[in-house]
Length: 223
Image (cartoon, rainbow, N blue to C red):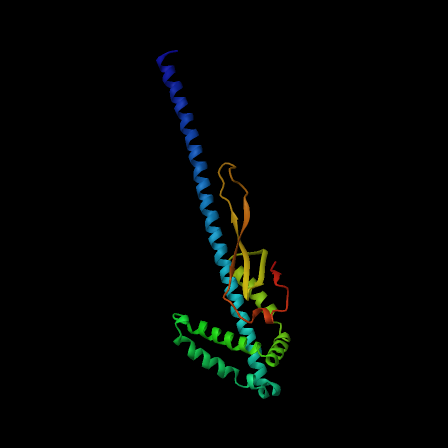
């Protein structure tokens, strides 16, 4: 074999080696890109579940307050019962007291108002007469549907998927299990066609009266 032939052969081997290395580098790059995408989707799913649990909690408070206040203000029976007669006043007084406690330092006005309502209503549920009337009043409202609809709405608003999504009630908190879809980036068929829902779970704040007023199953499928 002549020197020229040897050099050409070595050039060919080097070219094949470089092409092989480039392919390996590309595969490693695609793997890293997909790993980053999967982690980003996991974080996005956590955000989706968190937003949905907070939105569901917020609408539950809104619906319960609306039902109680309407009963107090719009019915004769409501005005005759001492608790209903001044519930808004009691909540306002409690909301004014809470910021003075170190336990609520840094809380927003809305968070303070919700906590005040939570405490006042929970205290009423410890009284047998008021408990039966409150549960009767709230049982006539379809509060659960509003909460479920809001959870679905929040998941979709965060580009989540409803497939496999769930709302759960446990320890007086609303839990949401939700997912965003992950789709892989491929190279020459490597990691092609991978699509997967990445699920995460999050819970809203404690609602002391939640399990007293929730009439449906403690686990609700949202799909």
